[in-house]
Image 1 (cartoon, rainbow, N blue to C red):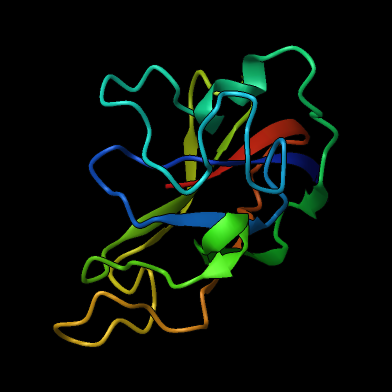
Image 2: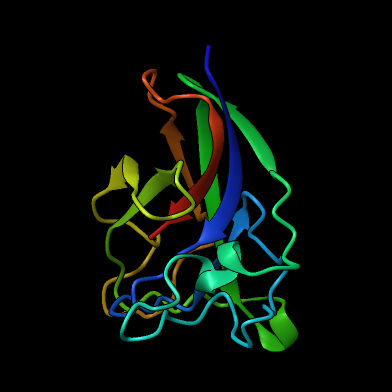
Length: 157
């Protein structure tokens, strides 16, 4: 089995602002406040200049120690949560839900490979006409068998 050491990051596309952040795997510069002066749950800049990781993956002084090791063929997951007062957990503004992807980069965020697409239900448990998501925000997926070994960045977007 190939080993994939994953540096976790949170990527949010500027047009999809769910006001959420990743809980697992642990994001770069966790828990919430980043040296970039922005919260993880906020959208990226409209021009995409801080994609991925709010640019943290290229900043000096940011801890880039791998937070998890995944193997090719392994079942794993990522988990998101809403942002609350003072950076704690809070309600997840779901904006009627949508779709998302789990992706991986082996070249420090220059190119990405989709590991799994979640069509609909991301975030989960959004009642019709509601802006609030349910509590279960864990998204299981499998690391494809052909995934090569090495240090990588993980992205939920």
